[in-house]
Image (tube, rainbow, N blue to C red):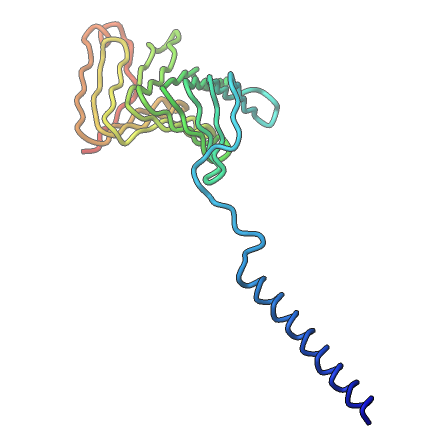
Length: 205
């Protein structure tokens, strides 16, 4: 009888130990995060110097080239920051453009480039057109569309003609320059007499 009682007591104590161990393990897992979520702060995780990026069309022909002195990647928004950027549009069917600024921010896998700080976009001249100079503190380039725009005050010059406004959009494929408000246009008489047409203009008050 005593031996049976001892066995029952031993089984009871062993059951308590197993239950106590299980409870302690469950409590520890709930109390302590074994794999805490990573912090998404705007801190770079990779960088490279003297970078050159190119984009090609389906035939493998380079249509856009982007250069810079230093490029940094930020995982929180999957963006890149490029210092001293130079962006070249090289589409055969459109005029060549060159954009520069102090810094550029690259989004959407390179399709959207925000040039910031003394941003300048120049469409080079040819036999039919004088060069076009588009300046603002910030210019956004949509690479696939070959479009550049800003919502800030901007100045566009072609020859001795000059256009001031707040908010501009330049389509390099159509050569259309839109100004959205505060338009001030000064077309030099010499440009008109020589038959050199300024970029197409449309002002929206």
